[in-house]
Image (tube, rainbow, N blue to C red; front, side, top):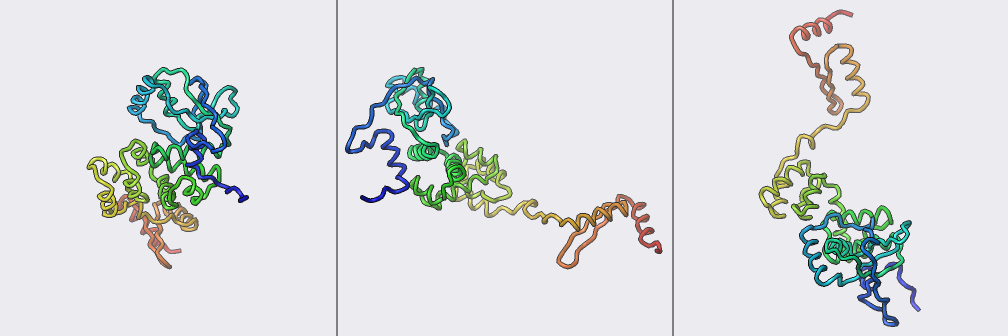
Length: 286
């Protein structure tokens, strides 16, 4: 008999866990019902933004027909009688809004790593995540469970380049991330701004003008780099110390700019009296 592969197909595994894909030898256990108060969100939930209007629509449906698909839960570690939601947090939130007191659940014993994987895949399958939530899910799987990009790509059914490009979005400035989180900018817009020193300014211009991704790429390429991007490298310790010594000796601000084997020494004065005093001191015989 062939050895079982180390990593299952997570998308397929989720269907089996939810009971949509019963094994041929047995029928999956029927869902049980738990009070909504006995459920708690998972710390591994990658979704951070819940659309309020969409939740209201789902709540109206739940009020009329109930929760049709069971939530996937596990006993919450360290919380007696409480269950952690692995898949189905939107349904739980909608049930609360609809004032439904209990919901159907499938209880499974799962390790943290499995919970993190299934929560990410479940949201990706439903296209419920924005690009930054997806990126943060990948980051957590890398950092906390030591997945490689190849592991992640296989697990979620994406290409390795897709995973790598999504992870790069985490390097965006915080204001630009906020625009992606709220849906103002798409992942394509955001990728065009990666590494640009004026990313925040350009992002606001993109929103104001309603630019598409191709127009955004052209805009980013056409913009000059900011002065900050052209700023010289910090001076080495010896050069900085010499500047301080000369400033103390002369009583005027001294700046040294090194260029190759030479450089430039600048002395700042505020009036002609300071300049005259400096010239007298420099011309005074030893």
